[in-house]
Image 1 (tube, one colour):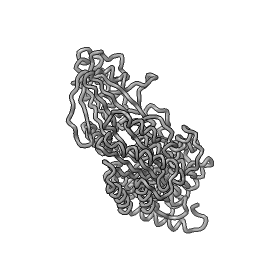
Image 2 (cartoon, one colour; image 1 turned 90 degrees about the vertical axis):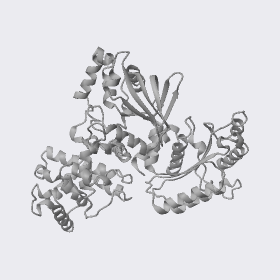
Image 3 (cartoon, one colour; image 1 turned 90 degrees about the horizontal axis):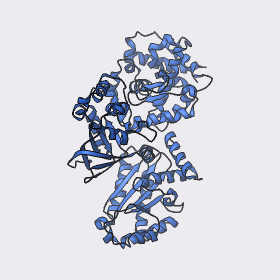
Image 4 (spheres, rainbow, N blue to C red; image 1 turned 45 degrees about the vertical axis):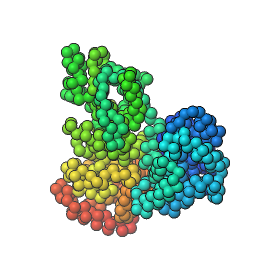
Length: 581
């Protein structure tokens, strides 16, 4: 199972003290993630996880008027009041711990759902399903008290793999959705395919809740837009903004609210120093709100109370204004009580809309094109992967992916261990996209030629980490003057290109989205992180291959011919006895 997903499941297991087999733990984890997106209270996910005899259904839950209803009596109680218009949702899940979405299993899931919703199921049903049938009957007997006079249903199918939207799999989900819609039992029918990317993100959102209230001095609303239910432009106290949105309980700045910001805080730059001087100038500080571009905040949940002019934000992210925010925090004592700042608050849960907002609000300043790769969901997963791997290897092999510009500026990490977007992409492009000649060229060339191949959603994270670790270890050899590595430093990208073949003892191209890639990378990682520095032997083998053909000029390494000649030499070298692994 994927290393980050496995860690997340272990965290859930630790929180609740579950003692179950891995497959059952995955079911419980999926149910917890899915139900927690609709129910915000505390609960034991075991209560919504079905038993082994509940055919094709691994989880079932009812959310009525914001409450998780698990018994018939609870359902009767909630409908016993005079309250009407109750939001009512049925959640049904299936979780497969394997990494594939299989048409036949999706079809079986659909069969189990239709059998259950018949209210007279023929397939085996355990205690949770039987109780759920009683709850459903209570709901159907109280349709007059339900919003839209009919409940909603959300169906989720989960695996530990990556959902690639293949044609037949898509069709299987569409058939399931159509079959449930044709029952005419539900107002809204939503069918979701959740792979590890989606599950990891849900888990992260569940465990990183930040909430804040902000008193507005003035505000005006923006009309509702597609995927943006509400948004406001407000004038707020700069001091209250720092107190309520930026400062944690220990008096430190909440760095987590800048995760979606393209750049981290840059410190003493001319722009930030100008913001500082404006705050310290009595006359200018009073017109700070018109001198500064302001702050843009995106949140999945926003509540405005018009009478009191108080806005509540949940799980908010400051997507533009990181420099202003940090400068305000650092110069808090210089902020006048009358100093105001313009804050734009946008409510949205649509990832595409949020990415467009981030891109648009940051395009007004000079930001390198490659910085926008930090917004990709895959780049966030890769950063998490680096952090998890650092726990598994010895500290001598720790490396860090600086997803956002200057993110680790104030960390005491050795510079050679930090990989920004540009350096990581050069190493990955050379080693796993087989484009060392482009990596040897001007760095932005990679983003011109290979931009569609970088940080793809179906890529595994291991190749990115492996290429960075190879780069770090080779650089260490150069710095410590081992094996004349410095002689080959200008060929580093071509060395990474053949290094993987040398370790595996044969030329074989495994794609980054292949199910084989994690195992393929694992062998390379184990050698690179070995305490006996066995990797030095394999780098020396690469040097031998390079020496077997004519040494290229610095100009020729930027062309494909040398790469082709080197691959031919590598293939030949590995066929000789006692070479490679």
